[in-house]
Amino acid sequence: MEAERDPEASPYITVQPRERHEAAMASEEEELLVFELAGRPVGYARLSGRLARRHGNVEIQTLVITERGRGLGTRAIELILEREFGRLGRHRVWLDAIGTNERALHTYEKLGFAREGAMREAWRLPDGSYDSIVLLSILDREWAELSGP
Image 1 (cartoon, rainbow, N blue to C red):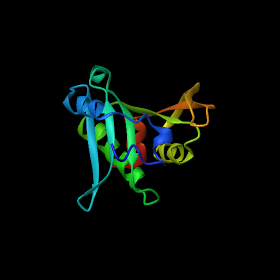
Image 2: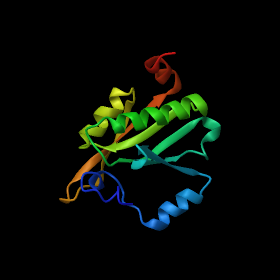
Image 3: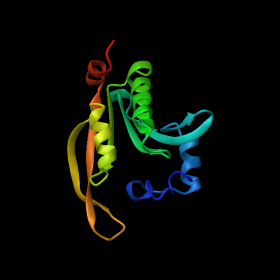
């Protein structure tokens, strides 16, 4: 919850109350992953996709990394992709990002995510203006090509 309230993260995510996080931890439809560095938490991800298991899809609903500029966000996504494609045999991982979140979009595209489209003016910014939500995904065969044997 503290990570979500970080002023650099909060404009790009939906800050959730404690009850929402507790519900996600208890749910069979969602999964929370905590990323640690030297034994201390540096971020988390909330994944959803149990309902879409038959189709091999998983959504990265939220990803928050508290220490920026060290490559930890990139590594967190790599770990998610290695887990979902390698160990769990998923076919497709998808997510969305706010159009003005250039750092996140750059990271996702660097890792092989393709832009699928946008929900135009679907996100209200703190100043009252609107921004688009960009949809991105990566397929198992694309990840296999990029990550090598």
